[in-house]
Image (tube, rainbow, N blue to C red; front, side, top):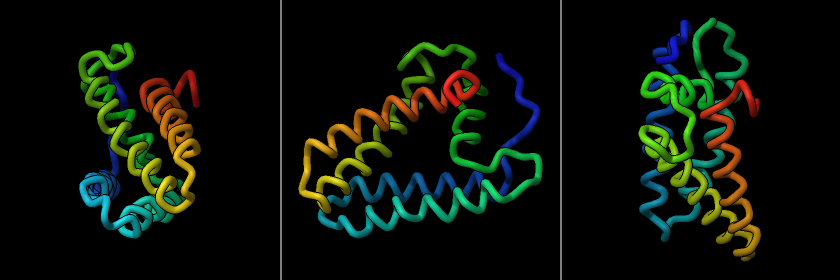
Length: 133
């Protein structure tokens, strides 16, 4: 098991969990695209404060996601074991982004492309930030 010295910040970890809860709620309410857009936009100020907050803990969504997955497994196989759970989280976030883009742009091809690229990017970034940044 991989050991990580820094733990998630006790304020940011529940804030990110609540944000992901809102992402799940927005996915279940396709008839309220403005709510989904608001949830996606809410990511920016939370992440901005987390990036600016220098206290030696894990504050950003990617730091907390990486910490969680490394506490569960040290394997880096795509969609295997706990990485499958990580992929489910990624798919929900990417789905909300794609659905919102499709609704507001009217461009389903753009939305599908963003969905695919977001899944690849987040999976690489959260499972192996030391390799993919």
